[in-house]
Length: 110
Image (tube, rainbow, N blue to C red; front, side, top):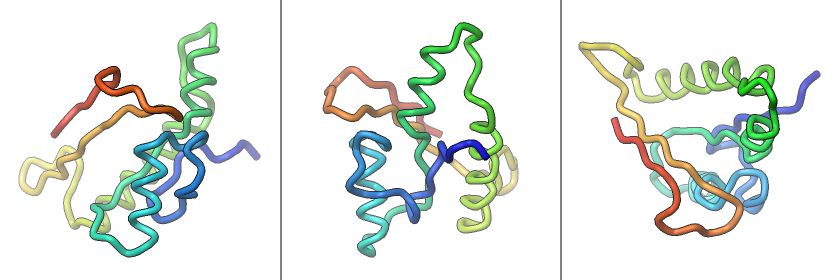
């Protein structure tokens, strides 16, 4: 069985910034202590490093399947659909790292 590379905010370890990046770990921790955080998930830094080390420029096996499963869970939690014209699920994609890098990361909104 391959290792898990995508973690919902409910299951990620809020203390593990090395695995989830600073933003991801903090979102997991805030979710787990009961703050009002929209549902979401984190793709691990391990998945990123494997991608960057790959000669084929392909994501590690299973990552997209995990992302699709997490998106389904977000859709169920919000009652909205990703790509649904009538009831769209709007998402934000934030890059992150294990250490702070202000101004160096990309954000994609909606």
